[in-house]
Length: 138
Image (cartoon, rainbow, N blue to C red):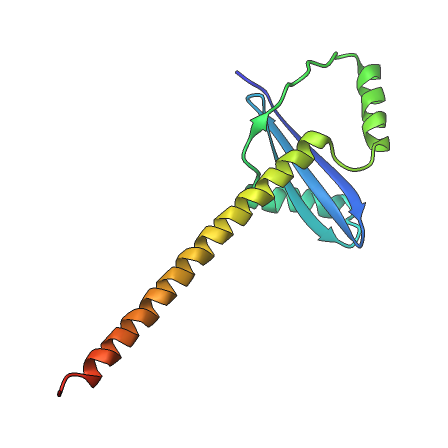
C-alpha cells in the first residue's frame, strides 16, 4: 500500500494570504492554490480544510520522487523548523500550478471558440432564411 502525503503552505502574496495545498499520492504531485484574503487564523484554516478540501480542484499529477525520511524525532523537528523558515512554495508545486493554469486556459479557449462558431453559424442561418423569404414571391 502506498502512502499519501498532504501539505499546506500559507504565505503572503501581496495583497492577499494564499494557501498552497500539495498532495502526493502514488509518487505523483498535484497542487491547488487557494486565496484566503486576510491572514487566516489556525482554526479558520482547519475549518476550511474540513469543509472544503474535497471541493478543491487539484492540478493534474506530475511525477515526483518521494524521499523516505528518518523517523528520528529530532530530525523531524529540525525539518519542520526548516520548512517554516522557507517562504513560498517549492518549484515542483509552482510548476504544477502553472500546468493547471495552462490547462484551464486551453479549456476556456476551446469553449469560447465553440461558442463563437455556433453563434456565427446561427447568424449565417438567419441571414439565409431572410434572404429566402425576400426572394420567395419573385
